[in-house]
Length: 47
Image 1 (cartoon, rainbow, N blue to C red):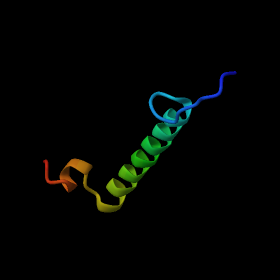
Image 2 (cartoon, rainbow, N blue to C red; image 1 turned 90 degrees about the horizontal axis):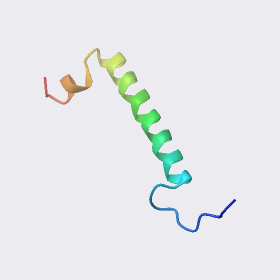
Image 3 (cartoon, one colour; image 1 turned 60 degrees about the vertical axis):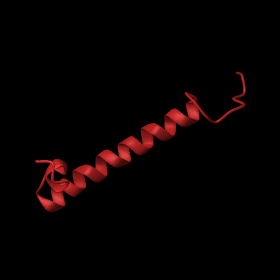
Image 4 (tube, one colour; image 1 turned 120 degrees about the horizontal axis):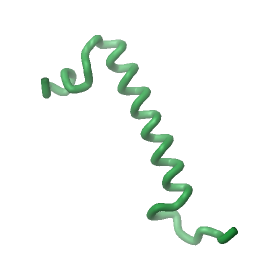
């Protein structure tokens, strides 16, 4: 297996972090909606 020399771009490390942060953001969004009773767009004043 080739060793990755860079940590930028579409590397396995970057994709793992993107996925983890996306899952974290989704869970935080759901928790915020549950606690406030309002959707995210309502909280931001867009609806």
